[in-house]
Image (cartoon, rainbow, N blue to C red; front, side):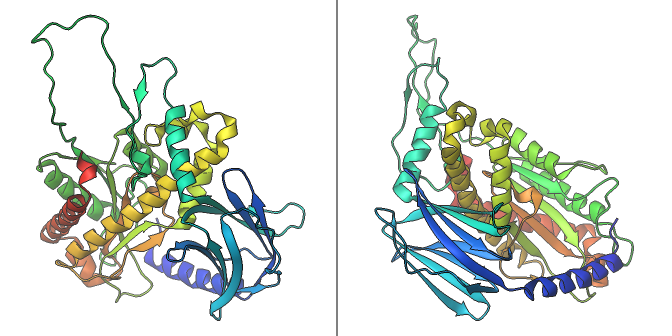
Length: 427
């Protein structure tokens, strides 16, 4: 159990730690560009690993790397870029505390990034792998073809452009029976039936982990379970929707088990419900979180290291690709994660808009953090902080059945709005 007082002290200590870390500047000492047949790798040698942000910009196409609290000590003028997709490299300081390195690209590109230790210099390395967009699309199709079982009937790949959520790309197989089929024995429907949208609802904490305890004794584990069960009841009354709870009572479920349950039940959406505390008793309102890129990077490394996970991602059996397809597996995971984070932010935005009708927003924008329960690479996932139990008025409100009903209705409304703008989820 973490009390509100302990959380206050932790906040103060963590704040002091951040100040000390930021007092140490990061030096970018070397930048190296490596060319491989299917992608380019850029290696940044840095003295102190600190915050970084990598993103892509269109018109013109660029890959941008922002390093917090960093100084440029490397020479960016001499690179043998050859026939790489990178045209040029330049740097700037958009803010006094930010060093920006820009790669001008010949065309649109995808990327993945991660921090790796340099065993020779004892510095850290920020690695950014850059894949041309058309190459990434080709790799996805190649992976899907390679993942088909060997002893299966011919598979006809339906040609289509790279879709928004590559984790859900599926091949359509057509088979013919050897035996003649008698008339009236088989009825073929030309209209595909929509499958029920599966929403996994995760009530935070439980059992030995009570979560936050409010000033008036309200327990987070009880409050969020009440909201989760109300939301599940509402969803199960909807046509073509089905709710699954990660827990239905007061017992403990590990974070990874919550993720595994979502994958086991083939969830389309994942909604985790919490009620936090803050450093002061005046903070109030709801917040919604999606996964951060930092959290996605660490999860991608976990998936690449654990072969048994490969068969789970979008139905593609990565185990059939062989050890030589590390880059291909990495591209597929990164594409799935990037699309899923985008969908998660859209879902979070719709949920926030609906919640604003019943309560105050602590932050009007979807925040991003590396929460474990948000790390499914192909399931849009959000974490909803329904309020602050450190605020006596908000605690009292969260303990009333009427307010829990309002929150559940608002959450359903936000999910409805997201599904209406993403009709492919319900097909």
